Figure 1 (tube, rainbow, N blue to C red):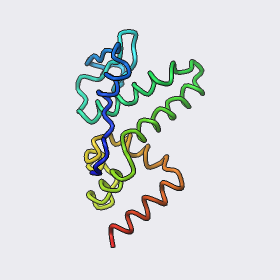
Figure 2 (figure 1 turned 30 degrees about the horizontal axis):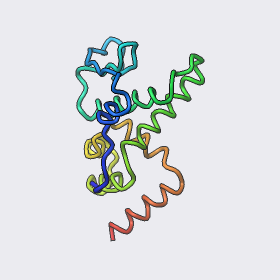
Figure 3 (figure 1 turned 180 degrees about the vertical axis):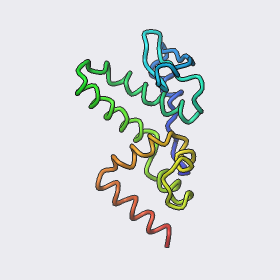
Length: 146
């Protein structure tokens, strides 16, 4: 992976939201990996570390942006925005290129594991690349494959 400082959601939470506690609980009945509650952030007790990182980043982004709108249309739009913010924070472009090369071009769970994120976060990052980012990734992949 690249030499820049990797996003660290636990550190970010400690530095910017020291009053917010994280609780590990069984969220299986709700079908959730995490959520914001009045007592802080709840993370699913049985999730893997990379899923916890992804979920914590997602919930921290909600903290930063404020309450999710009550209207279903706007709530969905807010979720999509937060998913993109999460993916951008967690997957810098140089790391994306490294992982894709390491995994021989595959975009799968192994690639997500290499990036230390959930597969959904990786797929979100890829689908939300700007045209300029996509060009940079394609050029970098071509350069490094030659």
